[in-house]
Length: 406
Image (cartoon, rainbow, N blue to C red; front, side, top):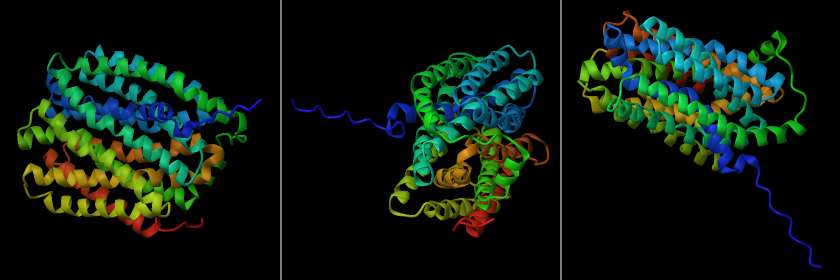
């Protein structure tokens, strides 16, 4: 009898269903923030506040999202990946319903704060799961694939948000998020859980959360380099989220429905950047994309510094927004992979720190954009992008070219 060929088993890391589902989990926060961007001025005006005050729904979300991420990684290391994912999604859905029925802007901001705490679960754990599947270039390529799909969130979510406003009021965007959360629960159960179960059979014992573990991670130069560079870039990106709609409305006369497609043009760089990074990784070293990303962000930062006090046409201004986000997309997969490399036995905790620290920069950027420190949203956005781009470029050029020993 002729022996039957053994069926070829495709690793989960190469299965489109697994990659797409992991990317969807990672995109929870991007979707939660970006789908509501066009509605920010309407939300503020609906509660009797100035249009710029609508940025509070971004800063409030990140205020919960930042420290909240510190919870989910250690929980995922202690209890496994899937249980915290499901708890986080359920809490996110309930907080979203609270947003819909909020009686005031202050109560809406508090509900968004709670939403942000639970919304931190899936991005953190998705990154830890990516690290579980390998290390080095394997993790960088998987994260690049995730970011390319993840990039559809900032590309499509504002357009969806603008479309929703054509048929209903701002609460429609939050009902969309309820449905999105339910869909993620289904995808996680069907396509991510089997990969997590398989890895758990062969995984080494994970190191529990402790001060010694945090100290060990924070003493790793590569971990600090990746984390600090991402923090600098995210501070500028969060300011786009918080002040972009108001800036386009006040300074360029764009309506809420027009801002969605405009933001999507820049958000397309979140897809293009990781694709470029993957291409470089095929023929170059793991760190090769870092300098190109740093160059894009540094050039954009210098341009925003020059434009901060000078009014320029929208097409010029937004071209440099695109360049900034492109640089972010190019260096993002590699910066994440390099930072996670020394944390194979504590990927959940490392992922929490790698998310929480950059998000703190995002909170500061969004809060400054919503405050009265800068006279206009135009200046707030320009200076935030200038600082983020120049600082990230400096960090990468000084510390990102080769492995540094602690």
